[in-house]
Amino acid sequence: MTDALHRPLGLLAELTHRCPLGCPYCSNPLELDRRSDELDTETWARVFREAAGLGVLQVHLSGGEPAARRDLTEIMAAARTAGLYSNLITSGVGLTPKTFTALVDAGLDHVQISIQDSEAETADHIAGYKGAYARKRALAAEVIRHGLPLTVNAVMHRANIDRIGDMVALALELGATRVEIAHVQYYGWALKNRGALMPTAEQVERAIGVVEDLRKRHHGHIVIDAVVPDYYARYPKPCVGGWGRRSLNVTPSGVVLPCHAAQSIPGLEFWNVRDHSLADIWASSPAFNAFRGDDWMQEPCRSCPRKHEDFGGCRCQAFALTGDARATDPVCHLSPQHALVGQLAAVQMDEPYAYRR
Image (cartoon, rainbow, N blue to C red; front, side, top):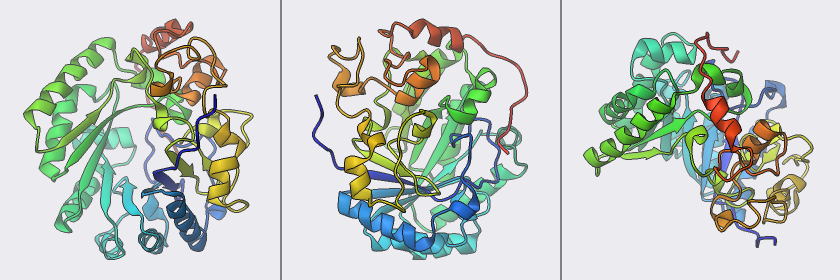
């Protein structure tokens, strides 16, 4: 059965893959787009107009580090002209107060800052950039000074998962209205560091209890978003709300993806905004149609009553762990390959990070 075509609600605009940080869990692809291949300002403006016409309500300006683009203010203004709610996802490094003020004047609505830990020394170590923590704090102060809502994105792993309480306290201190406790997703570069990043089962169990306590304690003051790490979950997450259902990504070079890591699946045909309209890509791109509906599903997904809740889980994770993008996400306890997830989660290695450079 093939679902009726949904309208996308969100657009992730990956403006560049250039980034000053070297995070060992970087979610960008192994092969990064070159600066010379990046879409120009006017093409991004057209993409935003076409996205709004499709029904998209919000655009996430991301990277890499968006501030690496000299035309970031113009891109921001184009998003506002298109009528899109804008969220800037930034490392906080390279974004000056002058540039930030210009972004606010251009219509920026919201800012999300990634912070690697609650302590400066360990945060800079994880980011692979000395002084990054101080710059993040300085930008957070600018966000609040301008009266914009702030979200703190805290990527959790073995080195910092025991400081979730400190991360929430930091978010409150900075004036954030939301904090995302985002566990590492083991695709792309993060796969190289899985053994160094994977938390223990005991750490995850403690963290679940800590998050529930923090939600009760700070209810009404800050929203705490958190989910169980994939490798320790009983059921898979409904990745991006279902493949080709609610969101789309545009890479720096203009390739349009159903999800951030979709290019890790070989054999899919992706279309580019340089050659097709966004509406044409959304409706007709072979990659977007590859895992829509449930005709592609294998058992136990095909007959599972949850198949329209989690959509078989993450296709990229299924491929990364089984070599078959149509397989049930092994995170699911019903998957015939679920034991593999437990085996991988049990591997924790004390070794230096392989930084993204």
